[in-house]
Length: 98
Image (cartoon, rainbow, N blue to C red; front, side):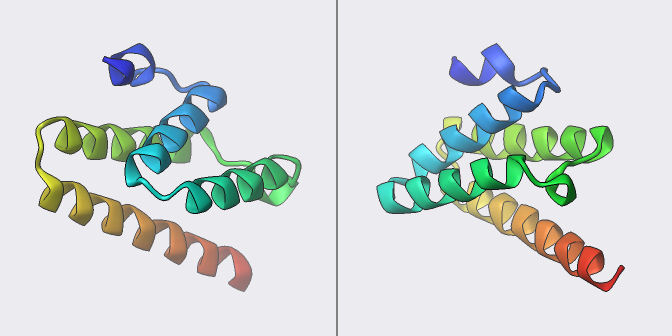
């Protein structure tokens, strides 16, 4: 139900809300606190700003992960989360090279 309220939005704040929901579902409060702190610090960084296309891709990834969680398919949710992480890591590497 929460997913439907912001799944189609491309507003940056809704993207953050989706990421927060995924962190809360992970069940690790320390991870959530650390990730949110780093995320807020990055919001002020020009390098951390993401394009509209990247925002669309991230929202789509998050929606797929949350839908797998809603369906009770932990294996698919885990695979999707790993794939999202690998894409984000490879993008960070490309940015460093540039």
